[in-house]
Length: 356
Image (spheres, helix red, strand yellow):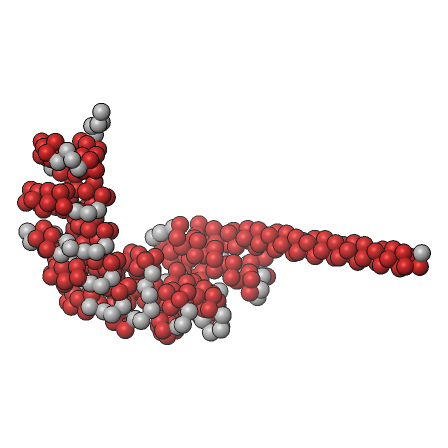
């Protein structure tokens, strides 16, 4: 009985402990929910104050600081100031013309530029990147010297924002960092940078050629996209030279760029480099030949239809021959090589016929 009473006592204590733990967890959840709810209410309240202030400034095309109100009351709160900057960036994207000048004046008058610059002095990479983003979005070109030092930062979020800022402010000149860039330039970052460039100066073609010979394959990819975007015909030979690059991705991008820079030699250049181990590269060649729409390619295509080891490539070639109105040839091959059932299926698929 004594042993049983001890076990019951321990069980009771365990149940009490579990109940207390559950109560504590419930209290924690309630507190967290309350804090989040309070933050949402505060955010909405502050947002309405900021929206009204910015709207008044936009409507009157001037900032009225004769009357001090709720906006000025919260200006010493950093979270409020951060929300102000966010709201101004959103307004900057929505409006154009003279309204931009009002928003810029708003950003300057209340020393929000200093806030963005101060964020670049923090150790946290996220905060630094945010400061660069804000300065870039608000066109604060005086922040450029501070931003430039982050081009070699170890954190991708930081140096990518610094790169974007340099190109946003300087255009093509802002791409100078590529000459010594060792990290990977992501596809997304490349697209961002390309969108910021309005022209490729004639006297900078040699610099693009230099980037095409970079040991950093992501820089080579960017240079190819840049040449394609601005139809840099003078770089045609450099692009052809990259058809032998060790990276599959570079060879594929070189073929895509040649679709834009094509001339009378393009068909010979791509077919001579067709013996590639990567099927995706070969498929890109077929897509390029399709865009060329050159009857001289028929001999090459027919050879690939009969001799290629890739089923997917044969299908693409058969469909391309069909678009070149070579239906008679395809039917002849299907009948002549009737022992090759796979080829017959491919051809009949291209002809959209059913085998009985």
